[in-house]
Each structure stands twice: as structure tokens, then as C-alpha cells.
Length: 274
Ligand code: ADP
Ligand code: MG
Image (cartoon, rainbow, N blue to C red; front, side, top):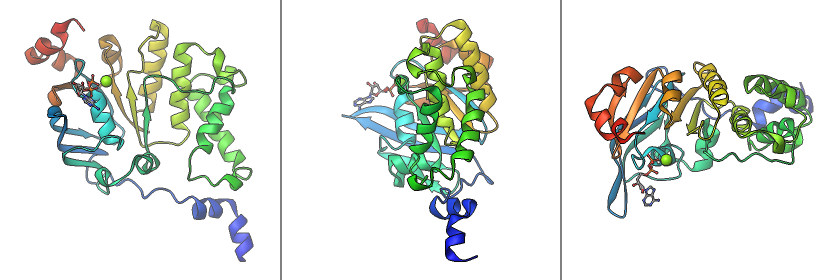
């Protein structure tokens, strides 16, 4: 093959111009590993010797009272906040404390904030397409070439989020729950290895919550998912393993039944009537 052929051969071009981020090595350990992490804000310890391990493909729920440090923990994993001390590793290869926020995102850590940020004037399909284009690994002039590949992924994601019928409707007409799913879909376009989701069912109807539970449990195994959530019923419906945070540390860890019958947990969290 001459140079031109080589450059125009789709797979090769993709490989050449968009090298996959150095793969996440989970052969000898977890996908996410936090050890003795500490963060203080003006002398207040928001995160206090936090240790947390997430296995590849796991779906983990994190619960805890307001101010426990849940959002700060996500800020640390995604590079938004730098801890004062400790270690944070993505697989055994990537030390996240040496990486910027965009680098962490392109290594395959996607984060969904509470408030959906979909483009209301664009269709659902276009929102998903844009999420892919926003991936800086995809070289813009190659987009035409990769249309087929992107289309396939859009169709796959539309099915996962249950919005296939609405693909050509503007996102502005979606109900609150559907917008949340679309945003999860936008994150899924880039096939993250680890998805962090902050309070996905806040403001959802019972039915929307059920559908969200299906969506998130359906991702487990393919992606690792960490869900921060206040709604106990929801956590009970999806959780395999639950971590309870309190004052920036892990207070308890186990099944929902184990943690919800733990006297320490009842005292600080369930006791609050949350
Ligand atoms: P959660 O998400 O569990 O409710 P947060 O992680 O938001 O808890 O907050 C943990 C603690 O750290 C809270 O007491 C909060 O007020 C404090 N905190 C979080 N971010 C900052 C910040 N940027 N500056 C000062 N204090 C902060
Ligand atoms: Mg929070």
C-alpha cells in the first residue's frame, strides 16, 4: 500500500489519527483505586483517609448524608479537585493525580452531573452525534468517512436509552427523565470504561426510576459504573455493593441489607430520615 492508500484506509486512518488512549490495565487489580486520600478546604477535612476500590465491570452505589464528601470524591477522580495527599489510580497504569481533567476524560472516565445539559433545539439523534464529534480523538475531516461507524453506535445507544422512537424529535420536548437518559447516552457514545453518575433519579417518576435502574444495571459488566444516590429505594433496586461515606471516609460497605442494618449507618444516615 502506498502512503495515500494507507491514509485513506478507514481502520488505519482511525488507528493512526485517533490512537486509543493507552489501555486501562485491570489484569492484576481494580479499575479504580483510591488510597488514603485527603482533601481539606480552608482547614476543613472534606475527604479524610478515603480508601475505595471499584472492580472492572462493577456497578457500585455510594450513599451518605449531605456533606459526606460524595461530590468531592467524584471531583478528585475526574481531576477537578487535587487531593492534598493519597493515591488515585485508573487500572494499574494510569496515575490520575498526574493528569488533567480532559486527559482523564479521554482515558475513558465519563461523568454525568445532576443537571442535564442536552441541546434542546437539536434532535436526539443530533445530540448523540455531537457527543461523538466532541471527542477530540476523532479528527474532524474524517467524520464523513466514519459516518457508518457513528451511525451504528448511535443506533445502539438509542436502543440502550429507549429513545429510538423519538430520534428525530428535538431534545427540548423530552420529559425530565428522558433528558437524563439522553445525557447518559451522550456519555456512552464515547464508550467510557468508567461512568460516574451523580444522583440520576432526582426528580424522576417511579416509572422513570425503574427504567433508569434497567439502563444502569444493563451497563454493568460492559462498563464500570459508580452511582451516587440519595434515594434508598432506587439504590436497593440496583445495588450489588454499597459504600456509605461519612465525614469523608468509608463508614460501611456491603450489600444494601448489610449496610442498612449497620448501627453506625442507621445512626448517621438512615437515622436522619433520608
Ligand atoms: P456531598 O456530595 O456528599 O453532599 P460534598 O463533597 O459536596 O458532599 O462536600 C463535602 C464537604 O466539603 C461539605 O462540608 C462541603 O461544604 C465541603 N466543600 C466541598 N467543596 C468545597 C469547596 N470547593 N470549598 C469549600 N468547602 C467545600
Ligand atoms: Mg453531592
